[in-house]
Length: 230
Image (cartoon, rainbow, N blue to C red):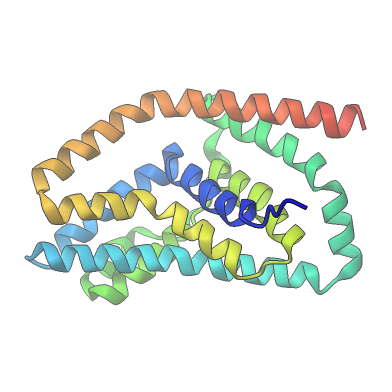
């Protein structure tokens, strides 16, 4: 029998990467790296360490939320069975909403931010600890896309595998991919880092509608298969 155990951790990492390159989380990561880099200290090594702490904070946030939700759901057998049976039906409409948002056809008023302006001004001054806290809070600032990927894709996968730690943690690793990449560029060369940021911002013009079309198509397909044809 073929062993597909490798599929689940790789999928969790890939879902995190998809989250990281979605327009709103990507913009947040870019802003955080630039802001942390300015506030962390004079040396590029200090900037890199603070950005690393920011990355760890994001990973811990997803780990904590995943552990609380999955652990709570698994503690209720009847609820766990219900979700595993109907999650695919719920995921289709959720992806449609995320796609409509990315295409600009749905209001962004449903976004949630866990970071106030005052915190953004003061936390980076705390060095590594402030960077970790800022990363933790930014990860909890879900927009429709990141919410769809985390709650609608990762959590069902983790529920199926009864993984309260490993899959949410790997998702956090994937979501930190652009932070790690841009932090290394900042450490190596600030001009190269600035060029990468500018290129990434230009890519968002295409990422927005492209991601929206993909989400909309997948959401419609899943709704047809798991709702209307069920």
